Length: 431
Ligand SMILES: Cc1ncc(COP(=O)(O)O)c(C=O)c1O
Image (cartoon, rainbow, N blue to C red; front, side):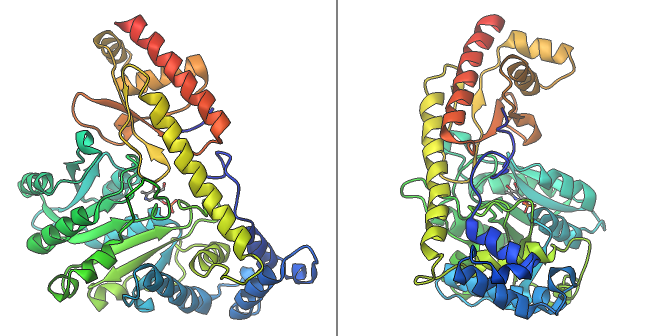
């Protein structure tokens, strides 16, 4: 029973029909004649096909990916941020947010007189570790406050920055909001504090906002860094450098298989932008990936035949995740030795587990991290697959696992019950 990766469809959530229909028609335009396709799916596909260069999705379609898509992304960002302007020339698409992250780390890497440092949260999605290693930049970890619902504390950023400056030149501050693996959503006040800190310390902000659609904690809203930055006035908006990224694989649309991500650059030197312009590179999404992005950026509008079903499917996914998150919190708070912070968004949780000393010793004898040992034992006994916390980073002496609450409710209940029963036995066996 898998619940270790954030693969929306792979875990049993239902795809968004409009995306499938439009992508299918674009791939096989004969479907424009099919009575089974709604009129607005055909209209959307037709408008996309007209923007392609006559060869359908098989061509390079440079003007579609270099001009049409950035324009649609910019309009989406403007709508999301209450009209704050977004320039399509500052938008670049990649084959998923993973490559956005790698590209930015590659851009900031230097090694004279010291290597570039990048502040990353602990815990963090492991893609950051890989991107930093590949770019040969130094990880400067800052700890999210688990005791305080994984809040990001500026004092901790200050401590980490000071420590980082002893062995590298920290230039970038990464924030993952909503959080993977923690499921936290940072407050507006926290974002303002982080922006002030970045301004004081001349740090480039890298805001990973790929999970922005998935916020459901009562009283917790998603605030984009771009919006907050501009609402803080020209003192900040004219000079703080911000790069934010977005992806079609992690929101309610969950098109991991089509894979496309994009970046918006704010206050970045045009010379840097020249290195990142939209040309065909191995990092580029496929035309079908761009089409899925197109639909997300310009979805059906009120009055369109697919509007209601699109909105219903979107809501269904978000509500099912919200319900699953509540179920998980409810079950875990009954389990001795498992502590789960409230989940405000995303599709992930990062509960802390007690691992008795005897189990820690046995794990060490077997050459494993204690949380990996826990996850192996759980897998052997129950068939449940979790991701061990050590892959994400965790405070010294604490152990966690990450799970996604994507599986359908009934299956998730079985999974949670298995973890609950296992933990009880595990504590008895090793205490
Ligand atoms: C926080 C975060 N950033 C980036 C990514 C990578 O996104 P993509 O699948 O578009 O490469 C993920 C995927 O899980 C993620 O959760």
